Length: 439
Ligand code: IMO
Ligand code: MG
Image (tube, rainbow, N blue to C red; front, side, top):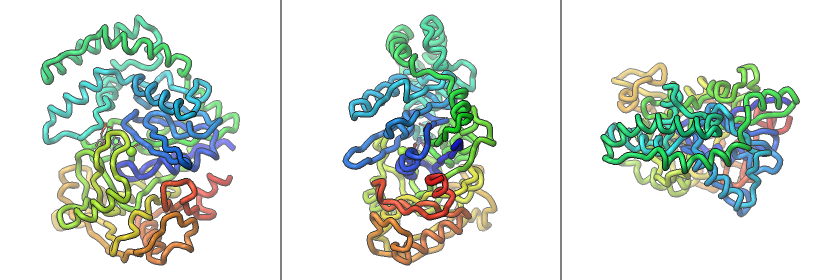
């Protein structure tokens, strides 16, 4: 049946999208990404095998599914083939039949990586804490109309001249801040063979997806990064450089808004953030120990950069905002089992700024740094929920916690994840998510 379901992280990323996308992928024909690049990192466990995905949609793990890298993405050809080769060595088929790369997507080239470094160095203690993958500078070139698109790369003369022109400009900055420069010839010689290798993967993915829908196939759209990292709606300037929210899926794939059948939010039962930027419910000082416990139990270290993630309580105020701008029809609540050992669990239900309750999510980062979260404290359940597959089998306090979160964010829960394995999942019958899984 022709349908498009979009999956989006509701917080600052790493909500556990990988597992949920993987569960849904079986029921869809195509899995597509619409923004970002290899700044993302999903880890998916299937039986004994663990796959780390950065650029290639999780659909690759399922035989017979097609994966689309949409026009809104920025693609580093070096990273693309490193990942393709790694996945191939694990027995997956990363072939042009299965992987379609948009001709309109932009390339990340070595000078973007260098510029990501200089940009962070220049910002000093106001740095964003990017993944240093060149994401921001590649989107700057796109918006500045000097970007090199995937389709341009297969024309060697065009590729050479664009690289020469762009490196000349990039070197002005790189020389000033790092005292070194990049050599255009060397960059061209590194990229040209990869561009040639990329050629069979290049597709008009907009036409491909719209045709697929016309033919009655279904598309699962996989967001990367997350709502609060959206360049417009996130905690600017501590954001990524793309539109991560559901609206971005239309622009980043060439799909009209009416084509979107549903939006699923991925909501983790606590919050994390990597990199800099405001984080109202962060566990600091007196709560650092709880933060450390969650970090260890939840393996909260980046898949892409290995950085320890900052940990905090569930923020229902921020997640309600995420639900609104994305239009979540259903949410998947992840990592419930990580909270199993806690005596008490706090949930932020609102912010106060300079003595007054905030009516909406603050637009200004400085205000977000100053807000005082308003908490409600719920009792912990102090027993294992790991691997539980039915809502009724959860301890009463865990069920109450799930219900509380759902009420506060105003979205029905379709799934609760109780462990990293596919089977460690509670599916809520007759939820919107259940209908997407069992149409
Ligand atoms: P997944 O897909 C969490 C963060 C970086 C930084 C900001 C900008 O695993 O959820 P960028 O390199 O994108 O310019 O960095 O965004 N960030 C992520 N945080 N998960 C991610 O991906 C992220 N991708 C980027 O830490 O704060
Ligand atoms: Mg990640």
